[in-house]
Amino acid sequence: MRQTSGRGGDTPDPVPPDPAPDAVDTRLGARLAELRAERGWSLGELAERTGISRSTLSRAERAETSPTAALLNRLCHVYGRTMSQLLSEVESEPALLLRAPEQQVWQDRASGFVRRSVSPPHAGLRAELVEGRLTAGADIAYDRPPVPGLEQHIWVLEGELGVTVQDVEHRLGAGDCLRMRVWGATRFRCTGSGEVRYLLAVVLP
Image: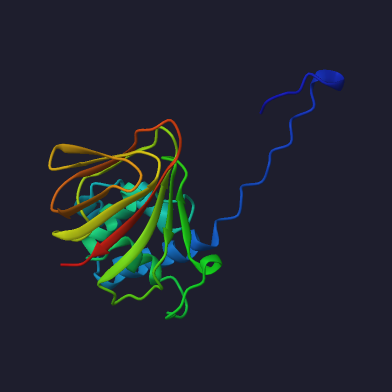
């Protein structure tokens, strides 16, 4: 325990309490545990299928840590879901109209990525709109798509974005749109000096 150099020099610093888990992370962790249980997989089996350590999977299911975008992408792959489908399953009631303040926002704080689910959530949707934001210098790599053959349209609204697909990097500026079908690894980088904001349209094959 650290000691302060204040009066007497032996008063321990107060230890701040652990922050309460985010409500979305709590519901998401519970859903991840349900999906694993539905398939009868142990944490060890899921770790082998995803390449994620058992301890990390366990902490995510117990909402002891906020999962990264790359981790969720691997879990979506083994569970056969897009990220929006997974996130929609932790919402109570699907809606036809979703006002801007009601749109779910999820953050990968470690990588500087903010994801807003623009489309009203529904587990059975085949197409969806997502707003992405990357802070300056942010770099996210996905080793596989959540669903093989997933079609994506990336339209940059502000800033500069580098997207690598099939070992080819595309540099996009405001107004540019990239269409791709994803079978393997992809990478998203904020290549400008400021934040990049883009619209992602996702279509299941």
